[in-house]
Image 1: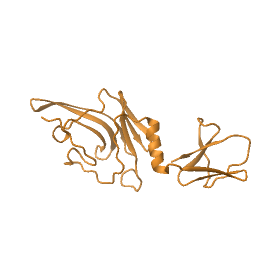
Image 2: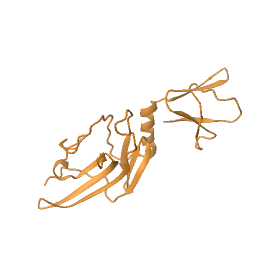
Image 3: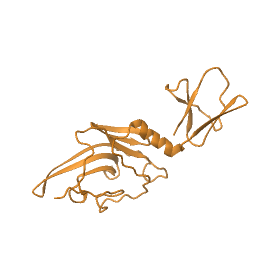
Length: 196
């Protein structure tokens, strides 16, 4: 039997599973002897789909990785599930690619929109996944800081402005801050970022 997702279900996937109940990333391995299936194993991480994700007007950014020991699932740049597994991404010889369906596109068609699909040869780090999400949401230069006549002015188009006393410290929302924001004058150094 050829090792092909349309005929024996060996595959690597990032999908909605369980009748629309869970996001899932992982792989399934089907073992055959004399053209008869003798075992099927799924190695994955899953997370219940939050209310409003499906059928709403907002895009959801999903990413899945296998780092050699764990399947990891990310939603909108944030890790949501991790599961240890001995099997990760696996070659599917003579298999067909499918985006929005199973195997050759024969079954389980996704009823929605899919955009900007990417497949990498190595697991992306959590910080790289967060950066992909942030860039998609805010663009390459989401936060603009200018100084004019000694007054600092911070402008942005989307997100919530956050502030910290040091670059690696805990950032907190600035309640009521709207763009352009003019921080009060003072001797203390402040650091700013956006939260989506």
